[in-house]
Amino acid sequence: MTTTTMRAISQDILGGPEVLKEIEVERPTPGPTEVLVRVRAAGVNPTDWKHRATGGMLGRPPFVLGWDVSGVVESVGIGTALYKPGDEVFGMLRYPYGHGAFAEYVTAPARTFARKPGKIDHVQAAALPLAALTAWQALVDIAGVKAGQRVLVHAAAGGVGHLAVQMAKARGAHVIGTASSAKHEFLRGLGADELIDYRSVDFAEVVGDVDVVIDTMGGDYGPRSLRTLREGGVIVSLVLSNMTEGLDAQAEELGIRAESMLVEPDYAGMKAIAALVETGGLRAEIDTVLPLEEAAKAHERGETGRTTGKIVLTV
Image (cartoon, rainbow, N blue to C red; front, side):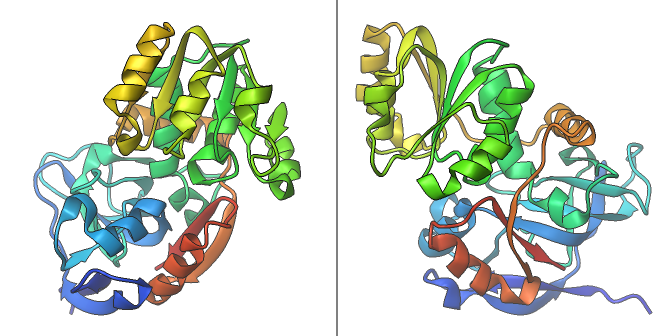
C-alpha cells in the first residue's frame, strides 16, 4: 500500500536552528500542469535561516522551508507533457511563497524544473537552482554582461558569488572578486582574474572602470561600489534593503544604472544553467552534505558565514 504521508522539516515558532523539527505531513498531489517530485537533495541558502529566524516574507510559522530541489518525477498532473514519472529534474520552487523543499516530496508547475544534467549527481544539482538563477538573472537578464566587460562580484566565494564568477567568465568578462585571502586560490581555480581581500583593502580604492557590480552584501557595499563603476555601468543589488532612494539618486547623478532583484522561477534560465553545466562551464562547490534530519546542523553551519560554496541536505 502506498503511503500518503511524508517526512518534512518544520517549525512552530521563530528562532534559532533548534526550532527545526522533523514531522509527518500529508504527501501533496500534483494539480493540472504540475509534477510531484520525490526529493533526492535540497539546497540550503541564507534565505532559509533568515526566514527561520524572522519569518521574513512568510510571516508566522508553521512552515516548511527550502527552495532548491533535485529529484525524480513521481507523478504528473493532468495536462503535463514535459515530464514523465522517472525523469530526473532540478529547479527552484517559486520564491518566496513556493517554499517546502525540506521534505520527501514537493509539487510545483512542471516548468519550475529543468532536466538534471546527466554529468552531475543530485547533491550537485540541488546546490544550483536558487543561487545560479540569481546569478544568471542578475548578470544576463538585467546587466547583459558581454565579452570584454569588467565585472565585480562581492562575496565571490559564497553561494551566489562563486557561480556568478563562473558565469561571467563563460561570457568572456574580466572578473574581479572580493573574498578573504584564504579563498583566493579557490576563486582563481574558477577563473577569477583579480581578487581583493576585503579584510585588508578597501575595494573602492583599488578597483575602477567596472561595467557591472553584483552586490550580494548590502550595507555600505552599494555606495562604495558606485565609486568603482564607469559612467553607463550597472549595479545589481541582491539585498533589497540596500536599494534605498539615496543609492538610486547617487547612481543617477553618476550616470550609473542601479537595479535590485528577487530571483524568479525561470524555465529558460534553468535550461541555460543545465547547458553550462554540461559543457563544463559551471559547477557548484559543495561545502557540507547532511541528511534531511540534520537540517538544524546545516543552518548552524551556514550561519557561521565561513562556508565556501553550498550546503546540501540529502533525502
